[in-house]
Amino acid sequence: MDIDFVIDNGSDIFPVEVKAEADLQAKSLKVYREKFHPNLAIRLSMSDYKKEEWLLNLSLYGVQTII
Image 1 (cartoon, rainbow, N blue to C red):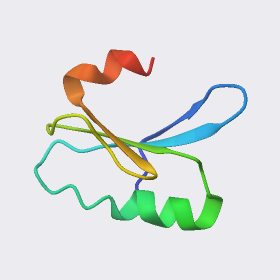
Image 2 (cartoon, rainbow, N blue to C red):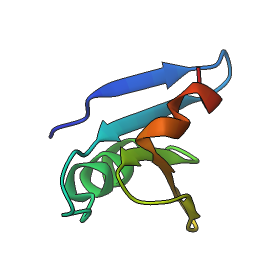
Image 3 (cartoon, helix red, strand yellow):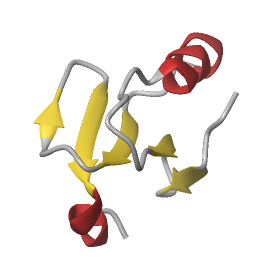
Image 4 (cartoon, one colour):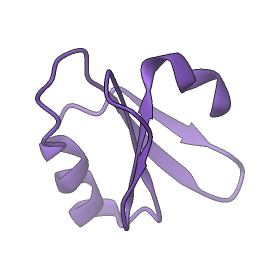
């Protein structure tokens, strides 16, 4: 599993994966999700904002929105 960070906001823990390339398959996040069942997973990448059912993709320049 290749989760880069976890964010604990006091009530939930969110896995975070950072991708610097165009391949955005989120395999590690899927494995983490199956094992720990987080409400949301976050992927930081070169792609634009995209919200799916369980995955939030933020562009790398948008990282300050989660800190």
